[in-house]
Amino acid sequence: MLEKSYWLCKSEPDNYNIGELEADEITPWDGVRNYGARNYMRDGMSMGDLCFFYHSNQKLPAIVGIMEVCSEAYPDALQFDPESKYFDEKSSEAEPRWINVDMRFIEKFAHPITRDQLKKKNELASMELFRLGRYSITRVSKEEWETILTLKNDS
Image (cartoon, rainbow, N blue to C red):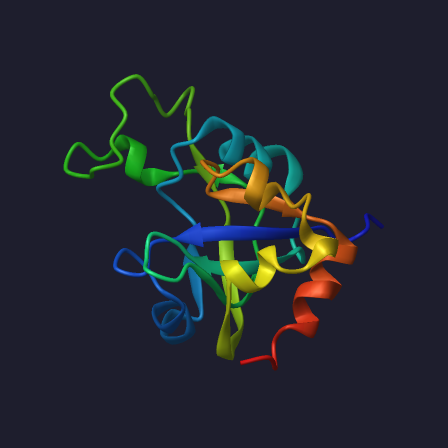
């Protein structure tokens, strides 16, 4: 059996937020249009992997909860919809360019863990979040995951 992997997945809260995931319970993590992040979903993520839900593009970007990968990768339907802002005219059903996975809600944090809190921890200095800032999905090592969980109760 493969060892569980850990991830950080960004979403702008006015686009899709942790409260919506909690209400939906499961959602496709669609609309990703960065090749590096796409490759992580396609080649790296497996069912059962855990992901931090990160609210980006707000005054205090923060980890706000945890979700779980609950499907294998499959083509992102939005790339085929001409009405969608994620439509890709170069993509075809025979050769889709973009994929997604489904995510299941696990937990909403009582207190968000801000980017500033993460940056203050020496153990997190080399996180992909800080090195691959344009990626909407980044890897999190098991050690980084465990360190971040210790910040859950800090306010």
